[in-house]
Image 1: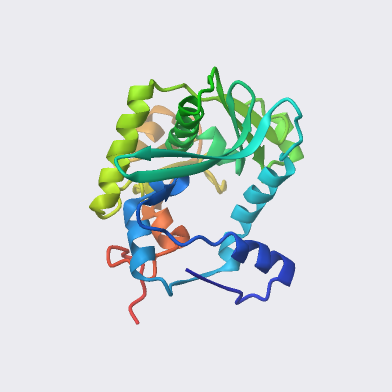
Image 2 (image 1 turned 90 degrees about the vertical axis):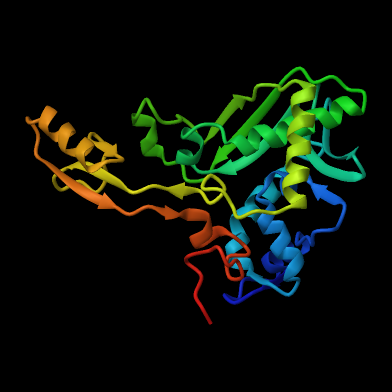
Length: 274
């Protein structure tokens, strides 16, 4: 892909983003590429001149910068190690953030993204890293995700359900080795025959009805319902408060705003016809 600079970002920022640009190669998969939707990789190969603006990649730059900060920061661990494994003629490559008897992976993410639960791709990614270390002859006793929460606010400390600092760690269950290889085989097969992205891969949000206290912007204290009757039933069972119902139309979040190949994907219903 070609990286553009339509918003005139400073040269240092643009060059750092452009430096990390990667073109898919036949027979070689980065771990992050392997676990991502197969259609995205396929369209990148079919459209090598496809453009993506650097402004859309700023948050990924934050993540990359965090990884560099931890290089050699712990003398008792192995940091930023590039690892490779081979499966049926396919090379899979990945770089782990930190190894010290276990796999430590650092993320920069949002508070609400983390509160919604550990992302399945995080579990897949780190378990492949663990397998890579095992294939190298090392043991892996634990997998940790360490997340810096970029949108954390001081006011969140007053909510016991929110993180009390802009940092959260969570352990990822370690898969059996046979399960990791099975997952890798499934992903390789998916990339051999790319199909339209699933609703999960499209980050689909269904239609919903938000029951809110009158005047509120969010449904906090109310309820998000996925059927209108459910919203009406909730109001009927809680008649002591003044409620209002707001219909929110569902959307495919990745397709609409975040997919790097959305402009050429024929399955993207948000694509603007030229």
